[in-house]
Structure formats: structure tokens, C-alpha cells
Image 1: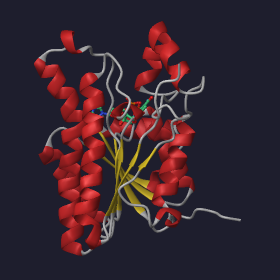
Image 2: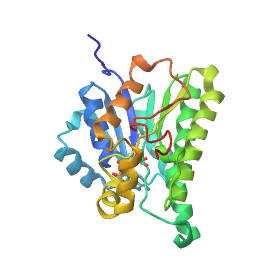
Image 3: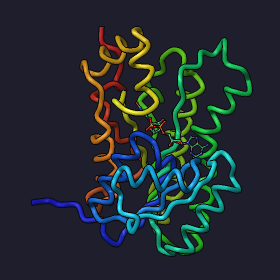
Length: 257
Ligand SMILES: NC(=O)c1ccc[n+]([C@@H]2O[C@H](COP(=O)([O-])OP(=O)(O)OC[C@H]3O[C@@H](n4cnc5c(N)ncnc54)[C@H](O)[C@@H]3O)[C@@H](O)[C@H]2O)c1
């Protein structure tokens, strides 16, 4: 029998109060990990949400921060390492957006979406990698992308191109840091029945038809995305580097007729 035991491991997760994150947190805590959680929402709200999810307070530490501000990312990363000096796994999970067609999206909005989905992850990587190098920690950085990084579709050009940049960034870092033992991987979900895409799926018939056509008629469960993270965080994935793991029912492969 193979079981995954992450006890003794500390994992930082950004965007930790989101829909998919709920399932990641559940699974990682069930596997014995201790979590450093960060999200833009205030601490009291976070505590309420995590309490609703029945996450034991002893299993996490929470920091409120806007990840699109590099100084706030630095503060969270430094505080996390003060508390957990050997922290070796960091998940840049925050991201997302609604429908924003290029023609009707202002320059400022386009940049905001791109910053949230791409530049914020570079702030996280910069802060974490510097500390891992200083402390000689062979850490594992994991980013959350989306199948639209490779399968663009209409109305989300800022989001899909930011995720495409993110996947390339992750693979570039994996190469640059390969000899240090630091690894960088990506989880790239398909259409998940949770979170930002839920509203669009419910309200937009064209999007619904598209989703059901590209992903074998169904959407991914948030639990399946959580399982991909548990696997990547585990010793079973210790030799995986620079890869995009895609729990997406094949949505990232291409369009079916
Ligand atoms: N839901 C999907 O179908 C789907 C599909 C593919 C990929 N993804 C990716 O999975 C990840 C999570 O998606 P989700 O749908 O669960 O998200 P969500 O919208 O449910 O959660 C996003 C979280 O990010 C937080 N947040 C927003 N702005 C922030 C900021 N500036 N700083 C810090 N935190 C901020 C929000 O408070 C929220 O808790 C994202 O990277 C998304 O792109 C989602």
C-alpha cells in the first residue's frame, strides 16, 4: 500500500482562501503538512473561513497580504521563514479572472490581471529563491497555471497570456536552478467545477458548451486538483522538475471537432 505522509513538511500557499485552495488545504493537512497560508483577505475573515472548512488552527499560520505588491510578498515570506526556517515547499496558487475581452478591457485592467497572474508569482519566486539559496535549502516551488496557457480562447487574453508566461517562467527557473537541487513545477488545471469559472459556466451558455466539448463532457473536481498538489509535494514526485502536471481531462490537448 502506498500512502503519502507529509508530516514534518511546511508548505506556503498563496490565494489560500479560494475555491480550489479549500480542497488543497484539506488534503495537505490530512497528509500531515503544516501550512503557511496567505490571501488578500483580513485575518479575522480568514480565521472564520478556515474554521468553516474545519481546518485545525494548529495546522496553519495565516498572513494577510496583497501579492501584487512585492513588499507585502517579501514580508510574508520573511515571516514564514522566521517561524519555519527550513520551509522547503511554496505554492504560488493565487490567480484568476472573469471574462475580459481585449477590445473592452482598459490598459489598466489588462495590466492588473497580468500582474496578479504573472508578476505576482515572480515576486514570490524572487523572495523565496533568495532565502533558499542563502540557506542551501533544496526547495520546491510550484505554480498554478491553467490549460488556457496552451489552449487560448476568447475573452480572457490577459489571463491566458499571463498563464502562458507563468509556465515558461517556471520552466526557465527549473533550468536556471537545476544544479542547486531546487525544483520548479506547475499544476495546470482544466475547467474546474469551483471558483472563478463557476459563475461564468452557470451564466454563459457559449462558455458552457465550449467547456463540455473540450473536456470530455465534464469539469474537473477541485479534489482532483488538490490530489495533484499532494502528489507533487510528496517524495513520490522527488525527481520531477520543470514539468506541467495537467489534471484537465485532456482540455489542454486541443479542440475536438
Ligand atoms: N477555477 C478554475 O476553473 C480554474 C481553472 C484553471 C486554473 N485555475 C487557477 O487556480 C487558481 C485558483 O483558482 P480559484 O478559481 O480557486 O480562485 P478563487 O477565485 O476561488 O480564489 C482566488 C483567491 O485569491 C485571493 N486574491 C485575490 N486577489 C488577491 C491578491 N491581490 N493578493 C492575494 N490574494 C488575492 C482571493 O481572495 C481568493 O481567495 C488560480 O491560479 C486560477 O487561475 C482555476
